[in-house]
Image (cartoon, rainbow, N blue to C red; front, side, top):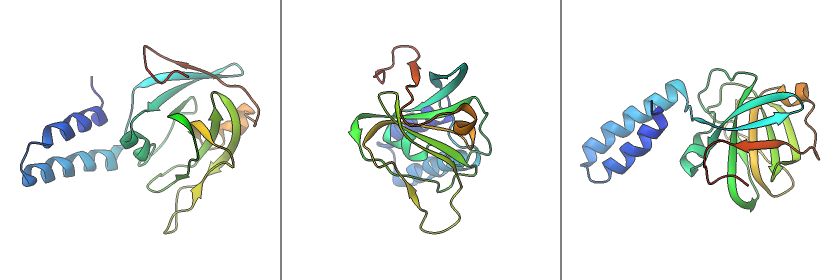
Length: 170
């Protein structure tokens, strides 16, 4: 079964040839679905941290990365999301519309450069941004406090395995 976000991207392509009123209706419906349930992407990667296997949703497109874990009401302790970038770059994450605390693990090709633990949902406007001092090409988000539970520290090498033939494999 296709996930709602995949449907939204397909609808976006369809809407390019539609009237503005049709575009507005479909865009409103798609936005309402995401704001009610968050986006749920397929599990396309895993990361092994010591003896624990974490299943990762892969945010590949700029649209998926922008939404991230917004609007989620919970995140299982052995689930997360990975953001993969084509090259090393500065990144800034914020917690706008995120309902749960998250851990952010900033990496370069699987090597941990920084860990931010229990980043709280945004409660002020404008929302603060969170970033490492280094350039990175991957970011993993986990349930708040999970990185500490697993003992993740800068310098650790994480075994990230991409499932199927995704082009995101480092």
